[in-house]
Amino acid sequence: MTMHPFSRRSARPSALRAALLPAHGTACVLLAAWLLTACGSTPLPPWPATPTAPRSAEQPAASRPQALPAPTGPAAVSRPLPDHAPLVVQGAGPMAAPAVLPSAPPAPPPYGAAVAARFPEPPMAYSTPGLRPERRAFTTNAELGQWLRALADSAAQGTATMATTATTRARVLTIGNSQRGEPIAGLLLTRAAGTDPASLERSGRPTVVLIGQQHGDEPAGSEALLVVSSELAQGLLEPLLDRINVVVVPRANPDGAQAGTRVTANGLDMNRDHLLLDTPEARALAQVVNDYRPILVLDAHEFTVAGRYLQKFNAIQRYDALLQYTTTANYPEFLTKASEEWYHQPLLAALAAQDLTSHWYYTTSTDMQDQRLSMGGIRPDTSRNVNGLKNAVSLLIETRGVGIGRMHIQRRVHTQVTAIASALRSTAERAADLEQVRSFVAREVSAQACRGQVVVEAAATPTRRELDFLDPDTGADRRLSVVWNSSLTLRLVKARFRPCGYWLAASATAAVERLKQLGLQVMRIAEPGAMLAETYLETARESGDRQDVRGSIAGNAGILRVQVTPMRRAIDAPAGSFYVPLNQPRAPLAVAALEPDTQNSYFANRVIADLADIARVMAIPALVFDETE
Image (cartoon, rainbow, N blue to C red; front, side):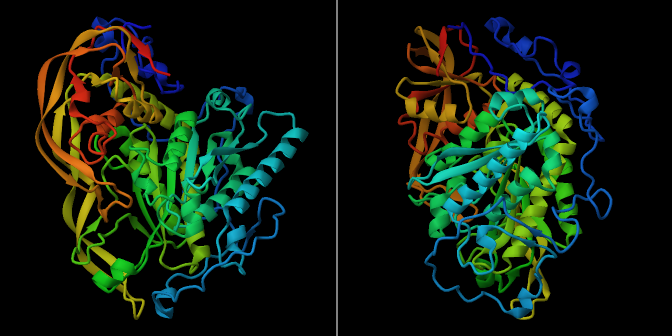
């Protein structure tokens, strides 16, 4: 038992941590009277202008890598995998003959030759089971698993012949199963001494998690991640493993991929499920992030090319790639800065070097009368935003693909590979700086408990923008002036004084379990006591649907929209009830889940049954706690 909630520090020590944090900064388990002093705010560290030399806990100084593999081509531009043309990227090893897959004849293309000519084939060909010229179907889940196992076997053979910790190790991960029992497979690639999370931690190298095909009808990301896996295991990207570890999950939604649908088997959009965790697929990804604590999470998707754009604007999407990083309330400022300067800007340069066009991610509503364009959402429900609130850089890479079948598939995969390779190189180049930033951010977020304001709800900012499309008949550029909802500047809708934590009734076990799956610490109250709190007085209620910028979210079961007024008073805290402290690095996720009057909250989505089962704790409670397992 402990007398106080404590913050499980998720920040890995960095070479510069001693200069940033006092020696007692990792404790924060002292008496309540000392808690805020021990976790006090610290000055911002200087922003690194050039990459800091990486550290390695396992390699002696003489053997540590001193330089990244230098890309060819224009200086300071990350090139894609092949640096000469043409190059066929071969597979991981011999593959079984593909199963005969029933598939409908390809649908007619949504545009003609003039538009298609704007997207020529890349100067190299990529080879995966699903990219074979004779194939109609993309890589099956069985083929995907075989591909990853072949890479792991090849790496194991190399390790057996080389007695050195610098050897690449690869391990197949089964991170979970889909709703129909399909394995969700991953591949861990590292040059650490072992492949378990503890060995990766000891290596001193940050970890990257790459995710593909959360939406089943977006195949290019999955195919590209098979290519990237091969190149990390035994190809042009392998030297990056001197500085980073990589976990690749090529297909997060096997059921949707098999059916060719956006949603999971039960009709849910899993990329809106990363706070609620209703699907086993989203829970599996959450566990991967908890186990490996990535500094970067990259999510590979595809966007609609014609469809609503053709209907609304008589235009075709022009860009090869649409990009966005975390844009949600309470995301640390330094991580936004790192996302923009260390990732987004190099991504633009890498794509441009391959004559690939790019822009900020945007979409449009399914309402045909709504002419607005909106950047990716600002709510804490997507992989991009939820993983950002876990103190990672979190990137969305979208390529043109939805609604065009196998058209331009080599170019789509080439775009994904180019973007992913750029992000991996950025992580390797900035590994030490990223660890410094994460260490600072984890401490700073924890120190904010009981202080200042926290944003409960925000909104995008409406502006106007000139945006280029393609004429569907001639293929020529066509510039349109559109209403543009920007996620880069958020408007405050609702803020409250930041509590010290949240109290949950003993009956709120479903909420407790999901909070722990998000990587949050939850304490069980061992002995009854009292605490100063704010309870919620309901002032209005209506039923509704969860919404995103596209419209109603697929699979939504309806939510309770409430308006509340916090009322301060002393409350009893019975033994067996729970306390969620905010002096922990992922505290903004607790705010997102537990403030009841937002559409993603656990109360709105009926994970918490009654407003009386939750309260905002406004002073450090002097209670006895057990930490829940």
